[in-house]
Image (cartoon, rainbow, N blue to C red):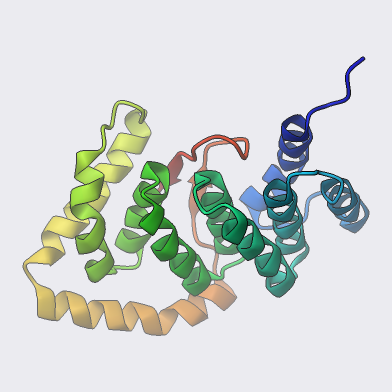
Length: 210
């Protein structure tokens, strides 16, 4: 029997991690997470290996070490949308919302449709009017045929937020500043409600918001 390919190994490890990434909690236990890290180190593709290892450390709660590996994966290949999205999802569920926003703002520069949609929805949640303005035309240019009814509804909500704020620059700017001030508090004391469809690392991410 042929040995499993690196891609299949990567996908298998990610599948094990995903429930913990989605919940923001380590549902596997430390031993299993470290086992995933050991297996990920055997993946010959360094970008895939670094991504899985980084996500695993984030699940453990070691955000700094996890970020180092995820940033390495991005450095090696910034054109893989799932690397950006999974990284942003993982830190978001650990309530590192400023970091999540930073990741997405950088990720959209590589023109990944799924990352751009994700970033637009996060910007709407945090009333980041400047970022919504930057992404609005790009989001409108993408087809919504790949979105289900729930996803289209969520995107429509984001557009309503945009339309309600775009003509009120002073008020929306002040509101954005207030939101930025409370992000640290939210990061410590509350969960950001983000529900994501189950995907494997090589696939684009579909994000459910609100």
